[in-house]
Length: 287
Image (cartoon, rainbow, N blue to C red):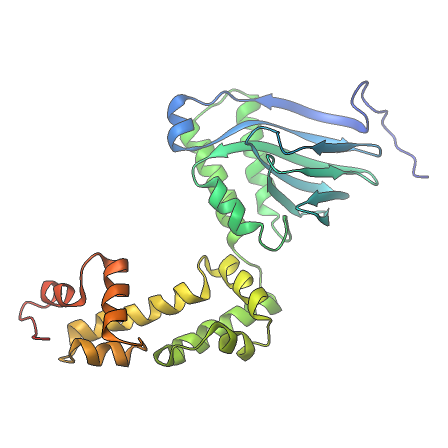
């Protein structure tokens, strides 16, 4: 059995040292318009430290950063282990557990606001642990220090949280991100043929369902939406720089019909292709 230098804090099983808890009461403006922290701390824990919450916990979001050691996490029926320099991010209103099986030191912050639910959905598709994000520790430390010292600039705190979330979406170089880059190049080359998700996934040797999840996590949109954007971007160029009619442009950009093209174009741009052409080209063209 390992020997621990510090003694557990009374009534807090497994916590042998902590800095905090630091609390912040957000303003009405922050609650309506910004990301905002509620409370956070830095803990050093040993067994039997465990947090287990049911699905009736308040609507908070939680970020944990492992400074040293390992923290085990159970979320959505999946067990993951966060190690030194790993980040954990999830929705506390969903059933979850996290615990120590050996000594671990970690920062944690409960927060809410802004687009947090959308970021949570985007980032949790392949689990709630994220590796190689050492810069996030500095941002969490700044937030905790601001709350501790009552140096509250809610816009600054919001920008720190937004910075954390955007950094989590940036993928580190890996075989997976290489596959997505290859898929993007393939789609850029063959969008006129409107390749299916299965064809694109086969090109990068990935399962279609896994490929779709991975693509959305790294690119911020589904493969279908990305392909449609490529088609519509080219359509805009042809509308402005060519004399092709609408039917010809729809065929050139890989749409099944001019009706499909017009509907998709108006949905994304709020105007029909012909209105777009006449607006951006003074001379205009006849369909």
